[in-house]
Length: 371
Image 1 (tube, rainbow, N blue to C red):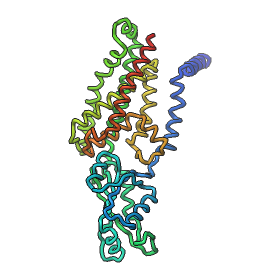
Image 2: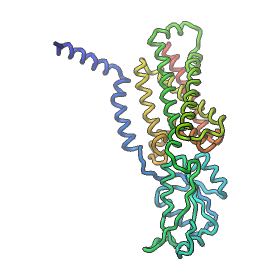
Image 3: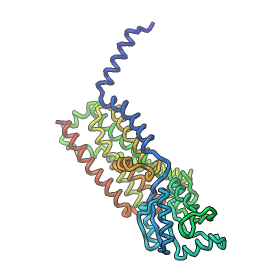
Image 4: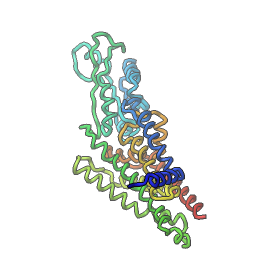
């Protein structure tokens, strides 16, 4: 017969160990709290304030009234104005905006003819970034915005239809958007976990004492730990893109050099993040727990699953800290929109700085632990 006394003794022992293990105890409390806050507050599929640009060839009071009406819907916010469609397309390719409204020179004439029933010609044109079907769908809903000539909707006012042109993913297939973003999530999980566990494993197996007695510097040890995993990350990226192309017809990138550069930057940033975790984790279990602590916000806030533009400002500020947010933007721009790496300067500079600062912090913390 099992002894309740002995079972109770083992149970109390486990509870005491959990209480002494501060990292594990923090994960028990923080993971459900973070998920509750993220899903309840930050995650929002009701898209609002999509960054858009306008090319207003008409430049009349009626065209300006249309812009006011569109912004009043809170679906879009016009952050840029261009003089040509080509400039607007470049901003769309770089990801500065998710949609462009083009108003023709004869906008007012088209509106009058449409209201009088003499023409069914669209009064304006939306150019949307089809690589994000959710944002593109939200903007497309504005194509049926009711208008009248004086900007006031009457009881029998006809609908002023605006033409929708979807770039980069005209079929609006979800797989085209998901597969490149999936690279960021898989690399975050594997690179952070592999690196953090590799350093902690040396400590658990007793090899750290041997390394201390060698003339190896902390920076040399850090670099030696992360360099082999760069090849692992490149292999994973190739597998995902290759299978995504074969199984889901996801387009392969035109600018392979840009793909290699942005991917290497993200791999280095993720490996550096793993090194930072390794200086805090005492066991491989703790390293895994802290990796999950990083992985959950990366999945929910990076724009991989939910539109970044739909998140509140506080969630966007938190998302900007995560390397995955920057890589999701870059990989989708390079693979789906044929963007060059130098046109993504903000994200490139952030990942570079993150890697350098993170490597410095990990080296200093590692040296401190050795002392």
